[in-house]
Amino acid sequence: MGNAAPLVHTATAIAAVVLLILKAKVNPALALVLGALYLGLVGGLGAERTLETVNKGFGDLMAEVGLLIVLGVLLGQLLSALGAIEKLVTLLLRVLGPRRLPYSFAVTMGTVLQSIFADVLLVMTAPLARSLGARIGPYGLARMAAAMALGVEVGIALSVPGIGALALAGLLHIPLGIMLLYGFPLAAVTILLTQLVFSALVKRGFWNPERDESAQAAATDAAASETAVSETAVSETAVSETAVSETAVSETAVAPPQGGAGPAVTGPPLALSLAPLLLALVMIAAGAFAEVAGWRSPVAGFLGDPVTGLLTGLVLACLVARRSLPPGAVGEAFGQGFRTSGQILVLTGVGGSLAAVVEAVGLGDLVKDSFSASTWAPLALVWLIAAVLHMAIGSVTTSAITAAGILAPVAPGLEVQPVLIALAAGAGSLFAIHATSNTFWLLQTLLGQTTRGTLKTVTVTVSGASVIALGLIQTAGVVL
Image (cartoon, rainbow, N blue to C red; front, side):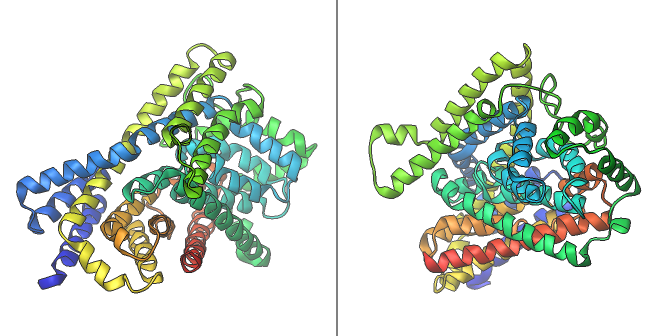
């Protein structure tokens, strides 16, 4: 096969992984390990070196982001238990008003609240979003559904501390602070632009309530409109009335920890609830700014390290929770956090194994020779790989990790900043979210949409965000 052999072997391995997941119903983590083993063996590494490479790739990535993922998930669980989500949305509604709520809601979910595991975030916010949808004007349900889809998915892939963004930063050896500085504004701008486009389309007939909303949802929204008293009272009363029935709809959703993570929790004031997360993000961002500015000191390095920031936030959250929640609530939140982070760690680690094998078989040299002459080509390639993988597999995180892993070996040799490659992989993994995604069915069920409506608010909308994000990334690549 000559010089094309690494490319052919890698393509075959990826195709095998997809078939194992879709046809044989093999768990994605196991499929990625098998794909890495196959690639190493047919790529000429031999049995012993293949196993060493798989183990080393897993261990190296865990050393890079493993502790960060665990700390981020635990912090998110405590935020849920403290009732921060409901208080934050109430504040947004009071300050910005109902017309701007879909935008502020989506950006908040896609940035500040990304430490909360996606399914938990959906279940926690869906009753609130659905009840508010009837009160923000025409086509409120459609706009809130699109806001939720954008906030959850774009945040996972692009914004620290989203799980996908953490994994991509580890794969490409990008300092987490740099990933935060680039990804946070990219996610916010992408969400805002996409929500604007969706709102404009809805006003021009893109959304048909009779066909895109279930009959039950239409009846519920009509009744809610008749009984609304004021904008500020809505978010306080709607949650307690609808939380039980809405949360029980989906048995497959990851439930929030018992004993305090549900919407009915009163908890401490909003500023105190969010202080741990905000402190962690400020410490990480400060470390990134110090690195960019060239301010070197042991103290700044320690305080600006992402592990220090997240650990400080977690300790503060524990102190707040112990003073505000019932006995045992912190332990239950930690137990749920450990169960959630376990599956994320395994999937992230085996993505590192595949990336290490891809590098060892020599794909890097071939890709570098083909794409090092320009900036847009490698970014477009990694976006395309992630998009194709997502359409086949249905997992944002898995497709982003796999796509970035393929180009991780060549990133240092290209005239493109590695952070842009990571963000391009994240953007591509957002393309064509459809029926293979758990998020698709959760949003359909929890928000009372038909399948036709969910295709519009999730598949079309998030795919648009994927393309918009790629355009912004390509622009950044030219400017930088």
